[in-house]
Amino acid sequence: MDKSSRSCKDLGSLLSANDTAKEYFMSLPDYVQGMIQQRSDNVHTVEQLRGYAENLLAGDK
Image 1 (cartoon, one colour):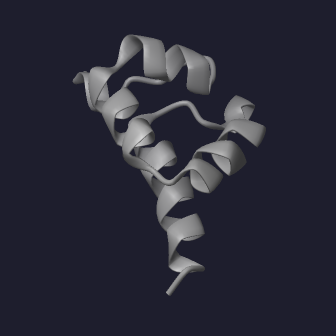
Image 2: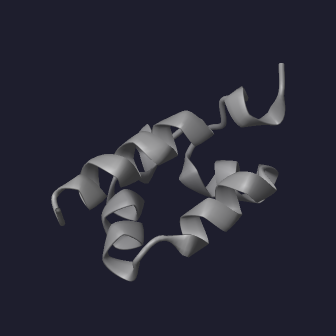
């Protein structure tokens, strides 16, 4: 299993364990980071992180 699909306990664990996830998260606007942090228990993979962020960013278009 590669690092990007590895499931972690929560967002904090994911960001600690996965540099790609951390870089992506830090590149997001502050308000998106905040909204994702509010649901951090539901973010276990890079794919989930990207999905949440894309949904939030789609509201800006």
